[in-house]
Length: 177
Picture 1 (cartoon, rainbow, N blue to C red):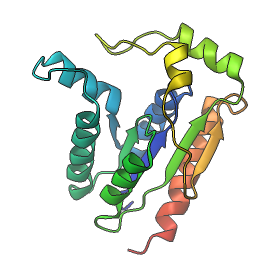
Picture 2: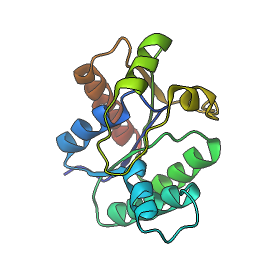
Picture 3: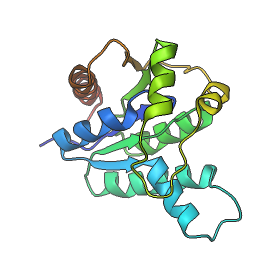
Picture 4: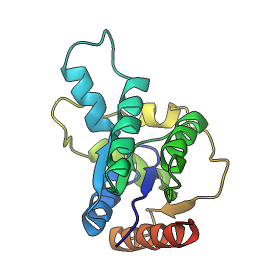
């Protein structure tokens, strides 16, 4: 039986995070946490004075902790743009010695990335997708530790999913029981 772990998929909007995360979660029978969905649910509540920023991530961390405590692997998908958010996810996974592979999706072809951002459809009711300019201007700090980088401009969805699964299996094997 597989030990529970926390797979983190990050990257700018339009790099294919949801496209890769969903089949990874299905393959593993894992819980799937998407910060966009959490943030939209918080916004829909109309209890917050402005669009959620940190609160979506904080809810995500709490939900991930609960799932890991229940013995359920989690696939968390979010932009994860800052060192502080990456460190917080890592702390969630490390809390009980869980394996926590980190994956960053990138799109190395700016014209393709722009096309994806400008032509994608909304799959969460009420969610306002960012414009290309907002994506280009977004604060996104470089990663400061080893992680798997997948360039979705040159790697198919199927191959990306397989790479994530291989990375997760390696992380699980390397983490002491």
